[in-house]
Length: 232
Image (tube, rainbow, N blue to C red; front, top):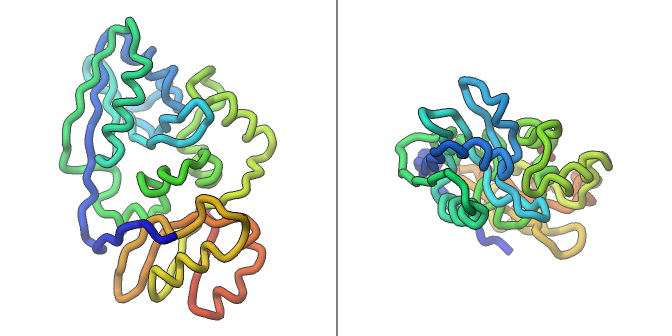
């Protein structure tokens, strides 16, 4: 069912910064985030916050700051991110402060959609990192850093060749309703459907989730003016 909200092509994306400071800030986040913070470069890196069952809670761009680390996260995900981290913040010298900021990794939702990057509307479908493609996994997860929350199941899935039932796709067409119906037209019930979309130049451009069986027979969709491409 279509439950995503459209955005105008030039509408700004809202971002928050979560500052984590203290003598144990890095050690704490190293056990919570999927990226290897010990090897974090000057430009920072994308990382994920996962549930114990490896479902994605949020993605964030992490950089070093004086006295700790900065995580830039979509504003719609800041509360759930901080709430999840604070659950594990026990007898640890680390403090979390949330700030609203003017700029983030993507200026507009259309930029994000064109960049094929998932956000709150995709993570709400409760999916594992491999659903979003191998490029997303390579950009956000270190498989050599050691343990972090959700690591065991993510590592097991990666070792099995990332054989997953649901796939992240980019789509375009004339209207969101027909796109959503197309994405839901194959496979069992589940998290499939149109998840993000913008109207640009009288065309709908979006992201969504499909069952992998849909990708084996795209001719009928193409003939009706709908483009569906898997994101790898």
